[in-house]
Every structure is written in structure tokens, then in C-alpha cells.
Amino acid sequence: MRSSIIARRYAKALILIGKEDGQAENYKAELDGIIDMLNQNPDFEQTVKNPLFDSAKRKKLFSTVIGSMDLSNVMRSYLNLMFSKYRFDRIREISEHYNKLNDELQGIVRADLISASELSSEAYDQIRQSLAKMTGKEVVLKTQQDPEIIGGIVTKIGDLVLDGSIKTQLKNMRESLKRGESV
Image (cartoon, rainbow, N blue to C red):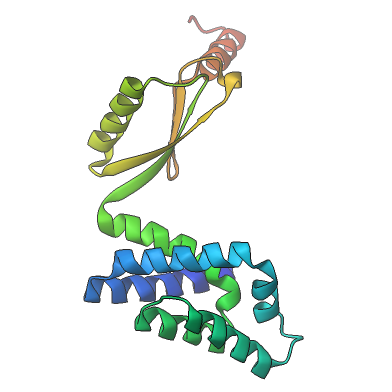
């Protein structure tokens, strides 16, 4: 829990700087690039995060690698602050929170769309437009298929779940019949 609060604070601090200087989208791209670099170099990440290694050598390695990347001065300072405050181990979580805050700033909401089979592009667009109208924001859909829902769709936007699957409808009918209600 505490790590999540810390990550949100660091993400919020960076988004505030990004709002102020108009570089929020650029900082998002830089954070994404850092996460990609860490994914490609897990040894670097483990070395930098490991307190058993000599701190001076870790700092030098960190500075060398970050210095070789094409990053803004704000991002370099931000990363160096994170490193000096022993928060670099939270970079992935911070990036995740930052992306959510940046989406809010841009008026974007992300949603998961689960369907039993692949949707046509027209159906996909219609669902996206309906969700955009409902939320008042631009909607970015991440789709996946789950044949177990039999038919229909399930949409998740944050904590809101819109379940129009055949599986759920059948389950609800069964529960109604068990209670002796008419369907």
C-alpha cells in the first residue's frame, strides 16, 4: 500500500511539471522508453536496485546509462532524484500511475472489451462511440476474446463493469428460477 502511495506522489509531481511546461506527453514517451530499456536490460535494473552493490558504483552506472539516453533535463533530474531517494525501484509503478494521469489530462479513458468472438470494425467503432458518449471522453479499447462468455460483450472501464454476456444472462435466469421468480 505504501509503495502505491509513493508511486502516485512521484507520478503526480511529474504530471504537474508536465502540465506547467506543456511537456506531459513527452515525459510519458520518455518514461515508456525507460521502461523499455529496463525490459531489455534486466541486469542493469537488478544492479541499480540492489542495495548489496556498492552505492558509488551503482550511482556511476546509473548516471552513465541515463546520461547516454536521449532524455530531457527535467527527466534526467527526476530520475536522479528518484535514485537518490531510493525510489527508482518503483519506476514501473510510477510510470503506470503517470500514464493514467496523463490519460486524464488528455481526456482519454481506457476500457477492456471482452467478446466471445472477433468483432467487426463497425461493431468495434459503434461500441467505442457509445462508451465515449457515456463517459464524455475519448475511449481507447483493448480487446480480447473469451469463448466462455458464449456471446455478447463485457466492458470494463475502471471499476465499472458492463456485462452483457450470454453466460451472465443465463446465470441470472438460473438464479431467478431457483428463487421461483418468473423469467
